[in-house]
Amino acid sequence: MADSTSGSNSQVGTVRVKRGLADMLRGGVIMDVVTPAEAKIAEDAGAVAVMALERVPADIRRDGGVARMSDPAMVEGIQQAVTIPVMAKARIGHFAEAQILESLGVDYVDESEVLTPADEAHHIDKWSFTVPFVCGATNLGEALRRISEGACMIRSKGEAGTGNIVEAVRHLRSILGDIRKITQADQAELFDWAKQLQAPLGLVQEVAETGCLPVPMFCAGGIATPADASLVMQLGAEAVFVGSGIFKSEDPAPRAKAIVEATTHFRDPTMVAKVSRGLGDAMPGLEIDELDTKLAERGW
Amino acid sequence: MSPIVGVLALQGASREHTDALGKLGTTVRQVRLPKDLDGLDAIVIPGGESTTISMLLESSKTFEPLSDLLADGLPVLGTCAGMILLAKEVLDGRSDQRSFARIDIAVRRNAFGRQIASFETDLHIKDLEDPFPGVFIRAPGAQILDPSVEILASVKRETGEETPVFCRQENVMVTSFHPELTDDLRLHQMFLEHL
Image: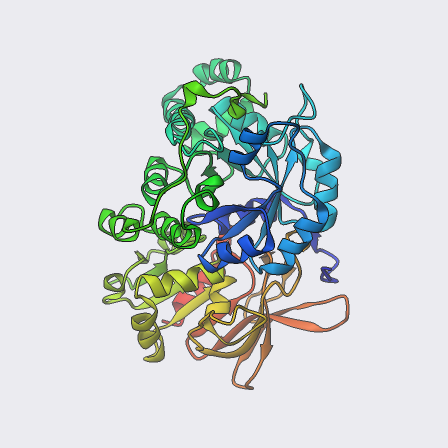
C-alpha cells in the first residue's frame, strides 16, 4: 500500500492530517454506497467521498436484525472502483471492527449509530488509531464528548433512512444554537455549561473562544432533495452525508449530481431551483412519530 | 491598492486560504461562478476533491473563462487538488477529468497513499531560511516534464527517490501540501510577492 517518506521528522496520523482530510471534504457530498457500481455512480456525480456499507439505512430499518461492519471484500471492491476517499462504518464501541477497517486502508471510519451498538457505555478510543473517525451527535455535549474521545469530524445525526429532514434540522439547530449561546457566556458560566453538557471544560472554553467546533461539522440523516442540502448548509453544516436519499430514489444519478450542485451553490436559490427540475420521485419518506426505532438515540 | 485575489470556492478548503490571504492584507473574493472572475489579479485553487471540483467547474460554466484567464497569464497558486487541476498531465486520474494544463508537470493522485499514510514533515523550501511545516493529505506528487519548471521543495521517499512537492513555472505555483492548514504565511507571501 502506502510507501511513506523517509524524513526522520515525518509523522502519520497527526490531529492535523486527520482533521485536515475533513477540511478537504467541506462543501461536498458523501454518499452511502453498497456496491462498486453504486460507488462509480457516486464518483461520476461528483461525490467527495463514499461511505461503503452493506445496506443503506432505509433497508436496515426495514429488515431489522443486527447491523454490522461490511464484508471486507465489499469494502475492497469499492476502494478499487473509485479514486475518491472511501469511508466505512463500525459499530459504536466495536474497536475490533475499526481495527479491521483501518487495516483495509479506509480513509475515515464512521463510528455509527446506524449499525447496532456493540458497547452500551463506551465509545471507541479514537486517539489510538491512525485512521481518522467521524461520529454522530444530536447535541453539543454529545459532539464534544466524541471530540474528547478523538473524533476528527462530527456529523449531526438526523434520523437515518427516513428521508425526513426534521431531525437533522433539530440536531443542527441544537448544536449551533448552543455554540452561539456559549460565545456570549462569561467565564463563570462556562463551568456550568461544561456541567450541563457533560463535556470537558477545555473544549467548552475553546468553543466559547472560537465560536465553532474544533473539528468540521457535517450533516447526516434524512437528506433526500437538493433543497434539503441547501437548507442544512444554510443552517451551518459544512458538508452533507446522503444515505438512502440517493439510491432509494427513482433515478439516482441525476439526483446525486443535483445534490452535489445544490451543496456548492446552497446560497443561490436560482441555482438550486435549476438543478431540482425533473429529478423524478425522491425516496419515500417516513414520519418520525411512527418509527419503532430511533437510531439517533443510540450513543451516549 | 491591494491586489484582488480570488479563491475558487466550489468545494474544499477555500476558507483557510481566504483567511491566510486576508491576514496578508489582500482583498479576497470567493469564486463560484464566471461573474466572480471579473477584475482578479490572481487566483488560488484550494485543496479538496479534484474530481468534484473539476465537475463543478464544468457545471457552473466557470471552466472555460477561468482557463482563458490562466492562459493569458493570470497568476495562480494551486494546493493539492489545485496542483492536479493545473498540471499538464494527470496520471491515473479519471478519463473525463479536465485540467487547465498550466504547468509542465505530470501529477500522480494520492502518490503517497491513502489517508493512513497522510503525514506531516518539515520541508526545506528554496529561498526560505527556516523549515516549513508540510501537511500532506492523500497528497499528489509531481514529475517534471520540462526543465523550465523550478523545483522549490521535494520529499525523499523510502525508495530514495525525490518527489517534487512544490514547483513553479512562470507565475504558476503548485504544492502537494497544505500551507493553508498551518499558521505559517510565508508561502502565501511568496505567491503575493510574485504578483
